[in-house]
Image (cartoon, rainbow, N blue to C red; front, side, top):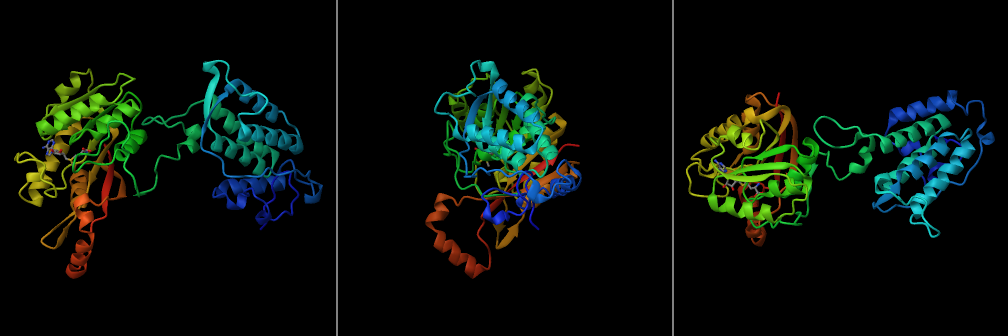
Length: 421
Ligand SMILES: C[S@@+](CC[C@H](N)C(=O)[O-])C[C@H]1O[C@@H](n2cnc3c(N)ncnc32)[C@H](O)[C@@H]1O
């Protein structure tokens, strides 16, 4: 089937044009609606050859840079589009606007330059052009104006959910937020105080993604296994308040230093406490900051005895058996759950292990401990696991052992997401 763009002679095969057509659009219901509009809408009754013809702008990949534009100037352009009464006028104006955005900054002055900082709106160039392309690709004038109204709303209004700051009216700009359940993170974020020195730390992208999905600015995050303070450093980047509990005093000291080294322009609270997360008095800790609850709970426990973090018997890495490890882990969940706001999220990062040739599914065991306590499982994310430096130098030996012993080399861990009911 050849889908006809509104205002474009009906017979141009999509393959010959650079632009997309609705055939390549995965929004099938919009597709169906557009087809209905062609039958019944403003172009109904026109033979395809009678429809006005236009030059389709060439569509090269655009930079993902952010433009600071004058909201007033942009809205003025959009209102001129709204008043276009024919597809031809609409199309010409939309093409001209598209060109200005693609070419910005323009050679002879920039009409979108915000004169007043309060009038500035920051928009990603590629997503703005995409929105205009959607109008140009629409099959009918009504449909194009529907996309136009949606763009205008995104400029003047903000719609967020109760659990994060993602502006749903401009959701296309959040393509760095991962919504797939398979995460391949090939490079650790080492910006700012993130040094990656602590053996057994997680990549900052994990708390970063989770905080952006499950908290708003200024809310409170509790990390029960703070280690080198990755979560708290990320809290500073994202303007969330962070409380971290860590059993080893020297590790906690190092974390405090790292967190303090991170700029804190928003003046958020970061506190690292030396304590056993199974028994820490979290209520008092939060009350000291005038808080009763946290909005996100992050747990990155030892993967049982894979790394021995200390010789303290209260350390989960010293649990004598898998059962004892799970009991201790469950105690941490019990001690912290009352302080998590209902409806909010608990994120657990955990990997499995081998013991005496047997795969021990610590991830699924921990998942079961949490679900027993009434949490709703929201997601099991599988994340690639960076081979440790020690293992990398012995990669071939591990491969040989795997072939001999019939086992597999760990390359993944889990990011488990639960919601408190
Ligand atoms: C896997 S590491 C966490 C690493 C951290 N996410 C980071 O990026 O640095 C687990 C940490 O839990 C700590 N730990 C073990 N048992 C604990 C307990 N009962 N209470 C608090 N912390 C504990 C260990 O000392 C270790 O630093």
